[in-house]
Length: 67
Image 1 (cartoon, helix red, strand yellow):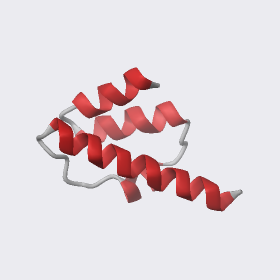
Image 2 (image 1 turned 45 degrees about the vertical axis):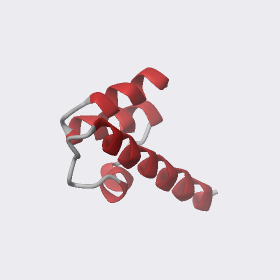
Image 3 (image 1 turned 90 degrees about the vertical axis):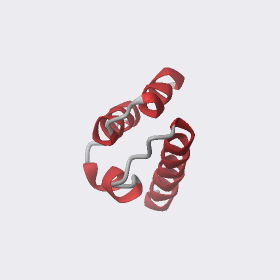
């Protein structure tokens, strides 16, 4: 999983990064990814890492509430 997260962070295309994350986590719907990932994809690798981290926390909360 670590390599996929690095790939998403290094990806300058936000939509492709979202697809990488969605596929890695087995998320079938774009709903959560679209909700939790910013439409603005930062130029800075550090900022992209923060966006992805926030998205993963949101996904974890979403899944925790489902069960």
